[in-house]
Length: 408
Ligand SMILES: Cc1ncc(COP(=O)(O)O)c(C=O)c1O
Image 1: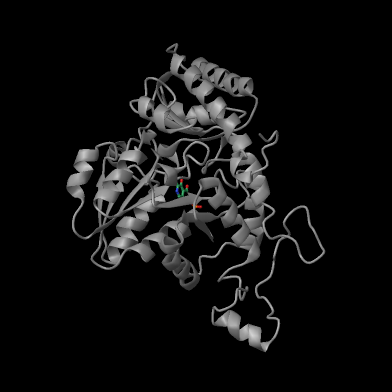
Image 2 (image 1 turned 90 degrees about the vertical axis):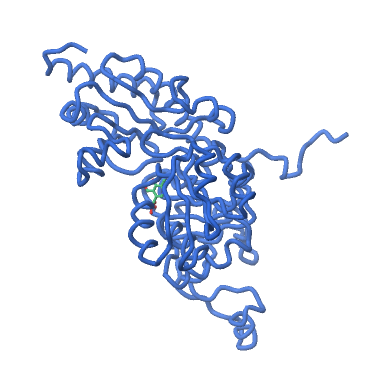
């Protein structure tokens, strides 16, 4: 019997990520502790014969950064270790990742079934751009597996979802969706931006391809825009070609920021999920709040399934404040710890009022159809000391209360 466990397959995920960050970073006798940034457009070839072999694809070697670069490759490799995927590709943004995957995996005349509760930018890409390229898209309630089965046709190629859908954090049962996709020989593609490992590892659950906006939790510090695509090599080949031809490469500097961010992802998420659960429980009992949407709450319709399939419930939550549009706006001005801005997955807590910002161009009726009421606020919970978050809302609700005749 061995006393020590030295096989890295048995290491924990944090240790494996730290190890992965060192893959291929030595240069001859130089052993950098931290991966350098390959901030270069092009690479020189050892000699004419090897240059020919590299261009013919017979010898491995870097040519030009839009094709590939050691920094972007290392970043994608680390995310593939994180997700337990065979391979990974880095992209210039989450949207570059999404658009490249759909252009590679569908042809004119193909059909896509997508959850209706997805990021607005993905939806806009489907209805404007993919539809113009003659792909048909059906949007479905992702919790209704029987209905989804009836939507799958002969020309359906892709079933697409996020795991916790905006804004009410609707939970997609990836295990069941994976079975459905396999039964119909179509690909299950999952945007895992809201629920990165260890919260969910969709490939293990039955997904074929995973997409991330690395702009969010993977980078984690609000200083890079990037994307990643994970899956088996045969599913990534055509996606890589689209990234090259449409110019969706990640910059080496952003890849390097991503490499740094990934090293602390699991620690950050642990704290963020813990803070989010406590904050959701606190908000649910506060008289100023009408409703809280967070899968970690027993009141959430997907709580049981989320508990059985996720490790933690993520750090995104939304809630409806009593009083409507103006009260929600006033709350934005009243908070002092939460930062008023779009995006998510950063180390500090971000707050947004979708009705007066990201969704202001929609009519009230259209907003309500997608669950965005006038009083809805969305939080991306950060790593702050929990008591400061709770106190921030207590003082903000107090401020609102003094401005109102009705006591909460
Ligand atoms: C779930 C989800 N997927 C994809 C994206 C697009 O990512 P990016 O802004 O990096 O293109 C976003 C952006 O907010 C998102 O929330």
